Length: 178
Image (cartoon, rainbow, N blue to C red; front, top):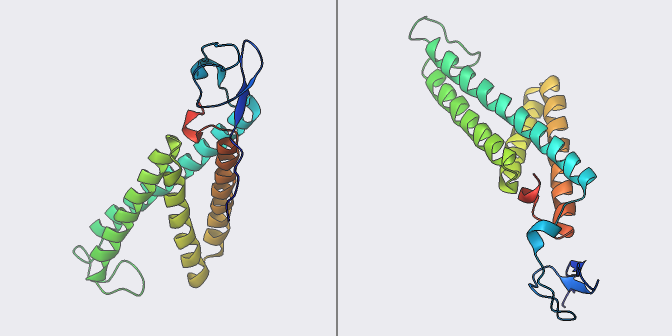
């Protein structure tokens, strides 16, 4: 059961012969083929991809900073300074663990934001995993505003993945989008 995946081809700049992307010289006319100058991602697709991936990275950056600040200030205002627990349904010893988890999650969001801004698709996948976890947390806790926000972020993440797939199908890497 073999699937024949079509190899992307480009025309030779001299004779117009259809050439695979990895060839260095045209077998028909002998022309030296330079891929760096010739290969361009279509402007409309590159512009859409660039806009969407930057927006996604920005949202994940804000979420990272928010989680870190919430963890730091939640930890500082813990029961060390007051007699009652800060967060509902916790005992005073749990606040430090919650602060640690919030800060750790914040750093994961920041890693996702940085790698997404570099157009490394594993960063988008990491951000989507964190978004799905946050979405399900909102679902179980009844946070409907969080559900709506994370639902939109998830849709945007999958939209970026679809554009990256389209770019790869045209023979380019998403990180080549300038």
